[in-house]
Image 1 (spheres, rainbow, N blue to C red):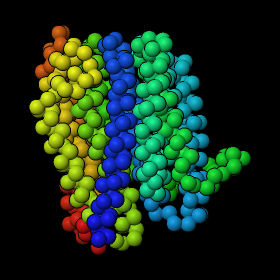
Image 2: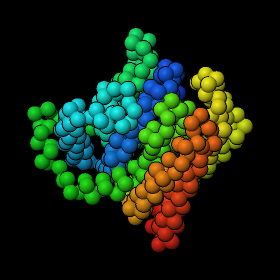
Image 3: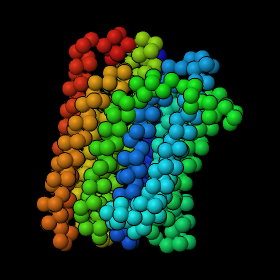
Image 4: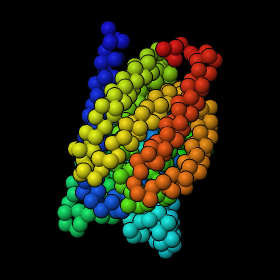
Length: 436
């Protein structure tokens, strides 16, 4: 009976987060039609979205760290320690961001030109949004670890809803541009951060005590957890995101918007797997801490596999359907690319589940191996890009399919590495709580 209730709770919680993620995804995606008419601006906009994903990679480790800490916290002192650590990290991030922002403001024109951005302001707004992109996983982590999935869902939902409302309003008032789209993105991050930060239930500290938090926390212990969790969790985000940055760098900016459209559809698979992983992670941490068995990994893998099959079949049968919903006829040429992109993401979706299982069990060996996959994947993309670019004087969908083949191979290597380390973990004899 208890096992059945546990499974029902998992389905209910992951269902709510999936619904919130779905609404957030749809509303975030609904911003794209407002920018897509100017294809050069649209390519820059989607490239900045992927740059935000890359900026947030270090913070993914923070989410895992704080999920761990919040799931294991039992006393008021534990909760006060969490609050002090959040404040200290926030102060450090804002201080570093101020330095980076000042440098880019005065020296960033060359960088903006190399990325084919319409203006430096697009990059500056992206970096400002990146501050909250860095901090948001930290406050998400506390909600996730304390299993406050209701508020976590609302924070995630607001990320897309506010982005759409603000972006649509700005585009309607001032015209379609990457800058207006990125301002909407930044406001979405800010709203989600405020909701998550104010609903965690942690002890509030008076502002006069904030600066002292920087010297009161154990930075060494935090760093010891942060590094492997950041490398492990961030590797999946990197694998999902870096291709768009490479394409924006090498390919014709008038064509990158077409590739971006297919990429956004393909990457949606990872976003829908995310809620299940978010529910799975703290349950495994708690199971390990309390030495109680759980089959949540098996359940997550089954659900993820089923989702991958459904998405893959739909990608084969009706690849043009999401294009018809979101884009005009000029984008239909990338329908074959949509199919390839979805299947290229399947091994990454499964690999992310396995990696998060290991990280939740404090088995960090995989975290130091996955960066090797990321490096090899990036080298393959960069080396292949010039040859593929030569085939795209006019838009050639097969050249872009060549990129997705590299993506698929890289993601298969990611899954293989995750599978190897998962096998090693269980071969070494997990404790009773991990037996399932």
